[in-house]
Image (cartoon, rainbow, N blue to C red; front, top):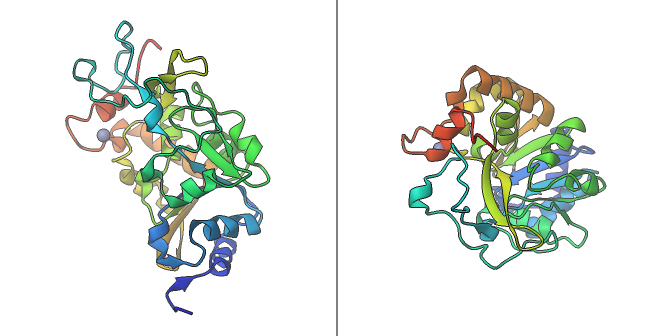
Length: 275
Ligand SMILES: [Zn+2]
């Protein structure tokens, strides 16, 4: 056996040690960060399921996004309508929670969650979540185009946790929900609904500045090393309340620092208006 190989049992032990066992977990992860995992992404998923967790992951699919309607422009919506360079992949396509399409940058573990035989996927064409485990249905049933972060609301309500496994705060979708709870409107993007009609859906904005939330979240954070993977662990409710308060106190805390970032510039003003 290669000494560098990580086994499912080690991951289970780590999950137990950081207090995540038997709790629902939203996992943001880089499989590569672990080093070599025997059994790959499935072994990581099985480790969470073996200790009684329900596992939730973002499973975004921007390939279903459509250009905005030309006749109805939403103000302060985080993009430049006159020089539209956004996605067009959704033209002629309709998303269904049964589709297995997922953006490549969601990572191998999120893709593997989605492909579990009993996985459930939310009904959001661009920013769905998928879940496996005993509470999967409860997380997924509330998600739709008008409530993109319903699964994270449930996570907070059920004393769930967020685990960042080898990734940084810029992958922590819960901070987008904190933006909403701080009073911002979420941006609207477009996709075909089940009938093939263009529909606006809620999405998160730019997360490139979220590392600046590290300070307010610092005392809430637990950390661990699992193989070579550095984990940050948060109680969802605590992190949500703290991040929302920090954003209310200083809306610029989420700004990525790029002067020409339409999304961050509009987010600090409160997001889209007239929706
Ligand atoms: Zn930005």
